[in-house]
Structures are given as C-alpha cells and as structure tokens.
Length: 244
Ligand SMILES: C[S@@+](CC[C@H](N)C(=O)[O-])C[C@H]1O[C@@H](n2cnc3c(N)ncnc32)[C@H](O)[C@@H]1O
Image 1 (cartoon, rainbow, N blue to C red):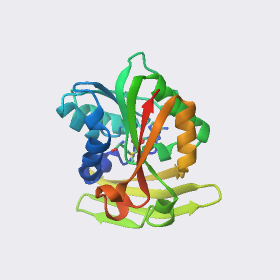
Image 2: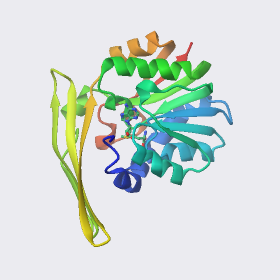
Image 3: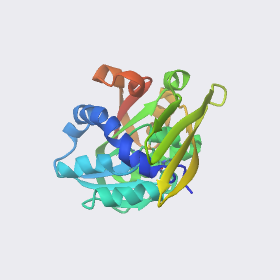
C-alpha cells in the first residue's frame, strides 16, 4: 500500500487548495505561459488531481499518474475530464507524446533512491515532445533543517490528524515523519498511521539527472521570491527544464 493511501481523504479535503493557491500563480508565470494552448500535459505524482483540474479548466488535456491508488481514486472523482493511472514514477511509460509535464508539492523528493529519480526523469523525457517544458518543485536542505514535518494537530468532531516524529538525517539526507489520522466512520473510530519519507537532493544532483535524461536549459526559481511565504516556501525551489 502506498504511503498516501491512508490519509488521501484528509489530503483531498485540506491540503490541495492551501498549496496550489500559492503554487499555481508561480507555475503560470514560469511555465504555463509557455505551454501551447490546449496542449497535452502530464502531471507526475498528481495526487488527488487538484492541479489537473486547474489545467483542464484552462483547456488543457491532462493525464496524471501517482503511486497511490487512494489519491488516484479522489483524482478520478474530482476531474472526470482528465485521465489518471496508478503507477510508480520509476516505471511510467506512455505511447502519447505530451506538450509539457509538471510535478508539484515536493513529489520528486518522495522518490527515495537516486537511481529511481534518474529513471523518473528518463520516463518523463521519453513521454515529451522535443522542446517541451517540465516544471517541478523540490525541497532543498534548508527545508529539512527548519520546518520539515513540524508538529501539527487538527481536531474536529469526526476526524483528527497529527504529524509527529519528524526527523532529518543530514548524513543519509533522508527525512521522515508520521501522519496519524483518526476518522469516525459509521460510529467507529478508525486509526491509520502513515510514514512519510523524503530524500533531500542537491541542485547539482537534480541538474545531472535531468541532463542525463535529455533535458537542457535548467532554470531555478526560489519560491519565496515568487510570494510563497512561510513554511511552504522555506527551502522550496521551482525548476523548469526543456526537453532537448
Ligand atoms: C505531497 S503529494 C503531492 C501531490 C500532488 N502533486 C499535489 O501537488 O497535490 C506527493 C505525491 O507523490 C506520490 N508519490 C510518492 N512517491 C511516488 C512514486 N515513486 N511514484 C509516483 N507517485 C509517488 C504520493 O502518492 C503523493 O500523491
């Protein structure tokens, strides 16, 4: 079972809009303005489809994929106009050639093995038309050294969610935290615990993986310079690369 399956319900309800209300205006400036009108867009690690919905509403044909069947279940409900598949990024393959690709909310940090990250860039590159732009955001080390997985609790009458046990090991560059959720369903409280793990990559590692996969012209944008203040913007960098 993928890590996000258990709290896909909570993610879908609370976290989509909070992130994308800040991220989408950035994507519009640095990437979407250069994507052909009505073009096909691939959303890598698309989660519950919130971004796919924004893109579809602007006339794009969107395909999203994600390792979590729970997240994809919500995506299909949320955006019937888009296509979705359950697939790990390291195994993604498509016969379609897309005009652009995107991956948001530090999804690529969730890929823990550098060779899987390289395979992911290769898979995306193969699925793109020459000249197509791939935009994504990554958390750099500063994020893991400051607010990563900061303790959090939300208590409502029929659901409770906590984030605890956050840690970052600067030697292995692996970060983790536990998300515990209780939901009252048909009179019974149900508990789930999900371990979320991320790897911190350097700009050089990202640049090398992208370059080896056939991307050139890498541009970086600090999220804070584009108005993403507070914890969400800390250590977050947006990248745009062009398929050669
Ligand atoms: C923080 S969420 C972001 C979701 C979505 N991109 C968004 O902006 O709302 C990270 C997503 O990455 C997915 N994910 C993690 N590892 C993955 C992998 N190896 N392949 C595909 N999806 C993965 C998770 O299931 C989760 O939906």
